[in-house]
Length: 370
Image (cartoon, rainbow, N blue to C red; front, side):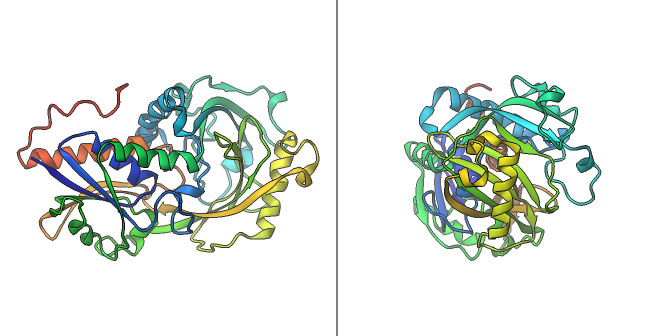
């Protein structure tokens, strides 16, 4: 039996879901989206991402990142055209940030006893003389950094190889996706990967969604290792990170994590503070010349799809017949949780198929390493 699936959304979550679903010959997959890889729009978060692996989940919610890391590692080792490379990452902690009031996305990243020390390679605590000024402790591990301008089109290419069809469509209601399959048949399953679009999309209208504004500076300067710090003295909504993208993609300097801020234009004062903090944390980034030594490619703003209750990955039946599998609300960890979340999407789709009497026992593994 042919399973007609429409994936709404072509960010990293939608594309990864489409890719894993398309590995089953029983699934005929169409991706519909307003924005596609190659576009740069404030509504489309994925191209603006760093992107890297810096674990943010609590241990009890770490499945998505745990299941994604082996696949990103495999791609880095075996598929250079995906645009991913290994990098050492250094995480610096300030004791006062652990006690600061307010919402802290990365509390678990900066734990002194993190769960990910058994997952990410080469984990070690830094000696005191390796910790940058103004910080109390730190750790180092091997991570990856992704050139999103290469990786997103690569995902599209992998989907195309598996027969996925892409359509540019502006949805006003998730139920409209039912009639958009390239097969000409009504979709029996819709995957909602519309990210921040789920706030206003008819049939979803998730009012717990809001942006977490990210402002960054992309520079030509190269720097290793990646750096992330637990806080700044500039603002509770500002953070410091440095990551060099693979394949000549430049180095991302960040940043902000401003929940509820829809502003699409870069703030020049914030940009100045981002660059100043970056060269203070890593003087070698600009050859010791301060911010005058930075070669800026562009300033960027992206709106992370933040959800009050965390990611939503579950089935919902609309109008008594249409199964929708939601995969949205990833905030700032869409890439590093992408394969784990898409794996759960496949599981939910297979549960729907089993309820309809289909035999899914011969579907095989989602991942080659599993």
